[in-house]
Length: 78
Image 1: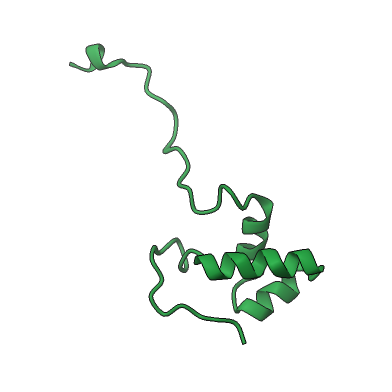
Image 2 (image 1 turned 60 degrees about the vertical axis):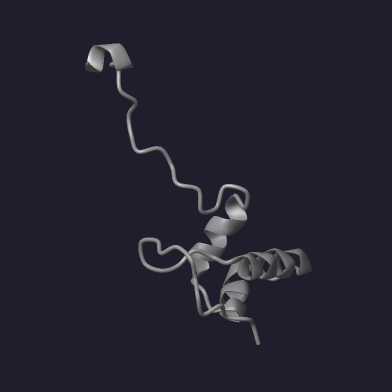
């Protein structure tokens, strides 16, 4: 039975970010050879969150840039 953390930290679009235990479980199950669907069933998360984490574990949970950078510098904004 997987450990489910009751006090999850940050909420994202439709759920909560993976905690450290879930991340470790996903990596361990992946190393053993389970596919994404089986991992998702075992930890009780969606296939998409498992796939997104496995695609780039180091970048998971880091907010991306908010859009196009401004052309104006600090001086022009004044």
